[in-house]
Length: 213
Image 1 (tube, rainbow, N blue to C red):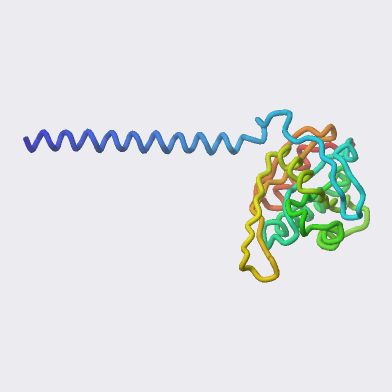
Image 2: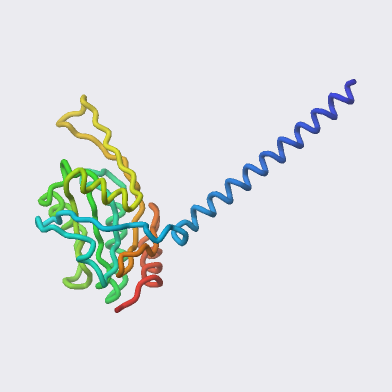
């Protein structure tokens, strides 16, 4: 009887090990699939938008045809992710030399309540090109709640404001997707860059995925 219990226990242990192994392999496969996601996103990813830039001018995606768009959704009151990401973009573009002239960095606010054109203009000036005309400066875009929601939906961007009535001065944070999207001259998806990418890595990939003319 004791031997039978040991045999049953051994079988249970073996099955558990097999199950853990299968789970681990499925996890690896999932991560590999996610890592390859930029090459498998549908062609309809992205789309038209009509928003107001930091100078009060209405801009649409058609304004940037024949150039690449490097699009990031965020907000000016973001404490860490947004300024870090924009700094990485700026440094990466500075490393590209003349190639960067065809890449327009675009920052779309997910906090239109606070991110007025004036606020965007002041905020983005910190990320302007180090040398005049070395690359396009950042284009900041804002709009109505509906306009922002439509743009975010087109780019599969999630965002949600966390408003705490107890917060001083009505401050609040906004959760949002942190990827940067590279769109081609015809408005088609080319690649995306996740949080944590280094400027050298982004610059090298941009160089390989864009053309000078």
